[in-house]
Amino acid sequence: MELAHGVGRVYELPVPLYLYLFGAAATVAASFAIAIGASTLRPIADREIGGPGAAVTLGSILKVVGLVALVLTVATGITDPDRGLTPATLMFWVVLIVLMVVLNAIVNGAWAATDPWSTLESLWSSDDKPEREPPWFLAPLVIYALFWFELVSGSGFEGRGVVLAVAVYTAYTLTIRSAYPGRWQSADPLWILFGFAGRCAPLTLTDERVIAHSPVKGLDEQRPMPLGHFVALFALLGSTTLDNVRETEGWVSAMETIGLDALPVKLLDSIWLALFGLGFFLPFLATVWIARRWLGPDRNLWELARLFGWSLIPIGIAYVLSHNVSLLVIGLPELISQLGGFLEGYVPSPRVVWFAEIGLIVGGHILGVWSAHRAALRLGDKRSAAASQIALTALMSLFTITTLWLLAQPLVVD
Image (tube, rainbow, N blue to C red; front, top):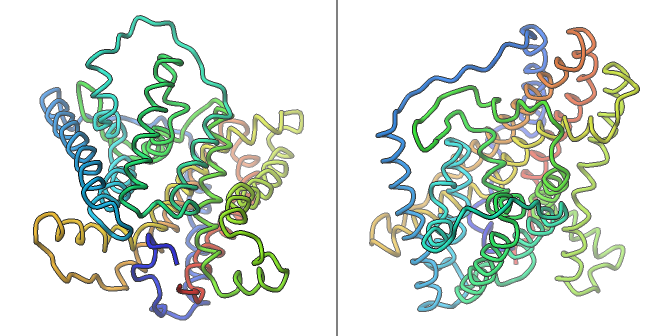
């Protein structure tokens, strides 16, 4: 099993399987009923909770943390290039990736303040170049590359692999910043991933203040999702699901039965990584096609799908976080132990991991249902909006059941 996730996810369910699957799906469905009952499209208000002083202080702290994290990742990767939960791999995956997803899911704009590459670039760059839009296909390609490095490459948890990845990413991000000034963020894998997380955040950090608002605000868009991000979102959904599926006994048995286990593992996993997103895209497109019946059959199906695509973002972020809960709750104490000598021998309760995964998955789907219903209300009256969302709510309940069922399956441990 991949080192990233072979850290404690194999344990018995705290409740019978059918109860927790039914309860999770019922919770998602109940959230739809509540949304219908309160289906007035009220504006989402902002509330300032911190002024310029708080914003500058928080931004400065994050900037220092970002630079220190980058330096420690590279330095420890060079001094300890081996495979395992080393300081380099833990700094990269736990701090620079997973913790940043968590932080941006709480405070939108956290990565903009933290990004150490932006800090370094500011030493020599100028902002007087005209803006250029990168090609849309770069977004899904770089998201695919990020998850390929984690799940397929075999080097994601090697110190030397992490150092090489940082070097490649540095060259790439500095290149696109120069080639596509003002718009390069839409082709940067970290900005895309953390940008998705930020759209679910209840707080926003700007240069001048800290704002509190509903977590649905970042999803409350009236324009279709940019094509590149739309495709990248399905790549993200497919990648986290693939890693859960390929570790199960059923998947391994199926691969052996049809003879695909004879193919090189990296080649096979690379292909599945590219294809698994279709398992989300095709059902989603079908439910949008059904919704179009009530919202206007003359509407462009592709644009309507991209409009409702915003509602899938919290599901994608929930999958990323639930996928990495075990890494976070074990890897962070392990990193603290290795760097500072504290928390040695700490082992979290399996129930903490389990209930965190359930809460993230169910919560992500509930936020998705809420966001989709608000989008539908903009396109039709209360009755047609409710009718249009029945199929999508059923699909999100199915996603919830399927994902939690996968987490409960017996794993094949290498």
